[in-house]
Each structure stands twice: as structure tokens, then as C-alpha cells.
Image (cartoon, rainbow, N blue to C red; front, side, top):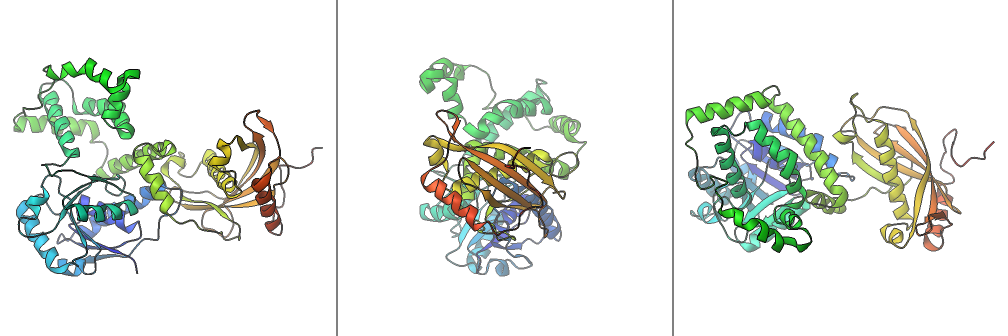
Length: 475
């Protein structure tokens, strides 16, 4: 029986929590007295289903069961994790946490999404909650700030890692935890820049997303500054730039009066900047960008990309496909694979096939260690045949047939399936075994040669295409 998460409060954050658990195979029970809660969460889930699986090259677990409840006590029965995401008012949180304590299992993790309150404040009335502060969209961004009892936080951290998140254990409780204190400082300075006519809301956003925001996404603050110090590192950076901390650059300790005029100024500029798009359009734009950035980070294991890679390693692989051949790729088509026609364009077919070939190389022993030892396979030729369109969000699978694997050549047929009874495309590929030190073709030996020959023998009786193009005798 699957594990269950109870989500108390189904707003933007609660809906994100529901999506994160549900898409990782948990049953999710939602309690929110808002009559529109189900509609709102369904919209969040639609975005999550479109984006989260696109981060992975392995299939996420089958979705859990989603249920909505009119009574809080019914929602928390049997829950492994209970997440409180009600409005940021301490009196409301005390009331809700008391109700959770009365009905939830004693073994359940009780997390609060609060962005500002400390655990000591949350638990003044006898609750045992820990702060589990996420970032929007919860179903995509991995960071969760955990504050509170050490044992409870460690238990929570283990669960969070299992659903692809990055738990940050805050050493001491403090107002607004860690990340929001940075955001607050930037927000205050931004308000002054707008109020004083230095920059518009759009110009400030451009300064962040075109510059340091991209650096922070994969390197953080201190590592970025360490590099800025050159070969001498952080010490040199501090010697160069430390004195500027005494300069009157910011108004960090001062906040402009939140007058109607300032609100109108900021709101008007924001409307001019983004008012031509609906909130749903902006959310999709945000999600598509995040998927693209995090998939790029995944290539090098930097920042959030490392979290995705670690989570992906936990996901099971399917052994064989509908044709009885080994499955070498199983994934959802991400937005980055799609062209202006709304379906997968030519290049990603080759990218998917290349990943399938890489996986097959691993299966015969030509893995990372083998390549580090100076031997590898290079692709010499590809022939792609397209039979059906593959749309964004489609679940695709690749099965690989070894057509030939003796001597210096490895001849493969990668079949790309998209849910039908026949492949949506095939990629016939010819690889040559290469000595990386000389860049010359040579025959493999040992385990790699034996496994390649074994696969060719095992696959010999499987049907082949009507015509094969590669590795044929030349006229």
C-alpha cells in the first residue's frame, strides 16, 4: 500500500505540495474549505504533469490517488506526512495544528509551509510541527528549508529526498529562515530603486535574470565570489571588495513608506511589463524556462541538476519493451524537444537515440569507467525513419536491437515508441570501437566483446525492418 500525504490548505503552495507528492506515487488527501480548491489544484496539477516528468530520463512512479475532504480529520487519517499551508497568521496556524495533532498519526511528519514563523512560535500551544518551507512552484523547485527538532527534521529530510527535493537543515531557528532573508533584502532595495526612479520593475527583473540570477542558479553566492577572486580565491576577493561594504550603496536598513503612490507606481509598471500575458501563460513560461535551465544544469550535475540526477538514480528501470527487446530510454517529451509545429522535431530523435545507444554501451560494459580507461564507441552513421508525430508531454520508450556487434562495429536499431502498437520512429545506427589515445578504430576485447556478441545472438530471431541501410555491402 502506498504512502499518504495530507495537504491542509490548497492554495498555490498547498497545490504545489499535492502535485509533488502525487506525481511521485503518493496518495494525496486535500482539505481546504474553499469551494474553488479542487478547481485551483487541478490547474496546478495540469502544469505539474506537463513539466515535472520532463526533468527525468526515467519514468516517475504511477500517480497516487488524489482525494478531497470536507473534514480535516478525515484528510489526515493514516497519513505519513501532513503539510499545513494555511494563511500566515499565527492564530490560524495554532488552531489548525491543534486539529491535526488530534487526528493525525503520532508517527506522521507534521510540516508547516510558513515562510516566517519559527518552530517555537508554531508549537506554543503544544504542537510538534517542523518548518518545511518550500519555494514556488513546489513541484519543480527542490529547496525545502527544514527547521525544528533534529530527529523530526532528519526523518522529513529522508522523505523529501525520495520525492526529488533538497532539504536544507537550518542550524538555528530565526525569523524568515535563510532564503527569504535574502529575498527580503533584494526586495527592499528594489522598492527603493523603483521609488527613486532609478529603474523600472522590468529593468530590475532584467538585471537579475540576465546576469547574477543565472550564476546563482548553479553556483550560489560564496562560490560565485570565490571565482571572482581569481587564482587567489575568496581571500583575494574579500581584500578587493570587502571595503565596499562600508560604502552607502544600499538602503538595506531602511524601508520606503508603503504609500498608495508607491503601490500604484509598482503595480502600473508591472502591468506594463507583463500584463499582456495571463497568469496561466506566465506560469507555463516560467515552468518551460525552469525545465530548460534545470535540464541544462543536469548535464553537469550543478545545482538543482545534481538533485535531479540523484533522484533519477532512485527510479526503477523497465527491463523489456512491447517487442521483448531491452528498454534503453523511458521518458516524457520535454518542452525543449518541441518545435513551432507543436511536436518533436528532428534533432531530438537523434538525441533520444544517442541516449539509447549510450545505455546499450553501458549494458555491454562500455560504461564511464571503460571510457576513462581510453576506449569507447563513436557513432559513424545514423539513418532515421519517421512514422508518426510525437507531441509534447508524450511518454516515450526506446528499445534497442543489436543487429551486429562483432569486430570493430556495433550495429544497432533503436525503436522509439510513443504508446502505439508500432514504433513512432526508428534510428539505425552504426558505431565504431575506438582507441581514444590514437583515435583509431580497433576491435574490442574481453567483457565488452563477449557481451556485444551475446546480445547479437539473443536478438537474432527478432524481426528486422524490411530494409536496413547501414553496414550493407557497397555497390
